[in-house]
Amino acid sequence: MRTWRVVGISFEHMHMGDLLRQVHEHPNAEIAGICDPQPERMAAAVASFAISPDRVFTDIRACIEATKPDLAVLCPATARHAEVAEIVATLGVDMLIEKPFAASLADADRILAAVKKAGVRLAINWPLRWYPPHVAAKRLIDEGAIGKAIEVHFYDGNRGPLYHLADKVEVSEEEVQSKKPSSWWYKKAFGGGSLLDYLGYGATLGTWYMNGEAPIEVTSVVDQPPGLEVDEHSITICRYATGLSKMETRWGTFTDPWTLQPQPKCGFVIVGTDGTISSYDYEPHIGVQTRARKEIHYLPADALEAPFRGPIEYVLYCKETGKPFEGPLDPALCRTAQRIVDTAALSAQERRTLPLLP
Figure (spheres, helix red, strand yellow):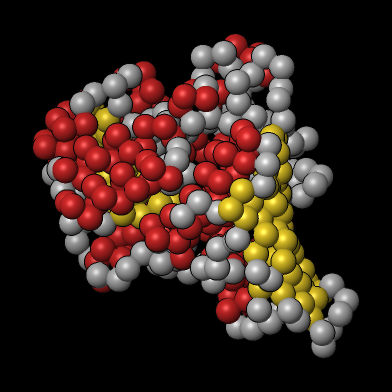
């Protein structure tokens, strides 16, 4: 395999550090450059990966023109996904956008149009795609272990987006509260709030589990925390032809799931015509019921193998082989999920059930 040149564009989302670490550790990839208009946001990455000054930029065009990358990893604030993706697309570079897809369906379509016009490739990364129990759940669904999937129940979140940095480095309570008033995560105009942060996970992996099926209508309710302009808790009901699915997002879980699973547990329960699967974040097993074995029994989560261990490895593999991006990284599937998210946001705003947006 050739050595792939990868650039990191925008450090507004803390996951940039995690993705750059995957580039740094990949035997056939290098960090060709990083870019953010605020240099201080790049300081930790510069130190962690020994990035030389000539590879650090504050202008996207200058970064891409100087480094000539094969792939750009994008981590801007949600509301800026379309703006940044359009710039990168016009420069002819394939993109991996960190979740969510976009702040709105209109923005998602802007991105898709830019990608199509430029003839570049696009993948969207949802970190839950790489959790071994969720991979095992999809494999069992595809194998017919629970018949046809007819319901997906999702609960996920964390203590809040300001409680951790890249690599899950914890932040003190005092620092969290001091940053809250100015953080984009808590600004409506920037695509903040738990619904936009986490509902895309449930909608995207849920669509994956349902083999691409879309709901008929959506009902959503969000909390109204005093002093905040965005939600920290949302509950969305999706009515499919096969029944009801529930997707709940939460900033303010009792503990972070990567440290200690909170109650309710973070993850999925999938109901099929012939059984059920529970798949919880970070757990080494999944729970299964079937008609032949009705008691809940536990199966080990799948051991992830190359090139399906993470987004950087997978995307570079697809580029090397010419294979399409599949599953939750597929923009077409992600657009179906974005329709669910947009309908949920509008439903919460209008306080009524709405048909799924086209």
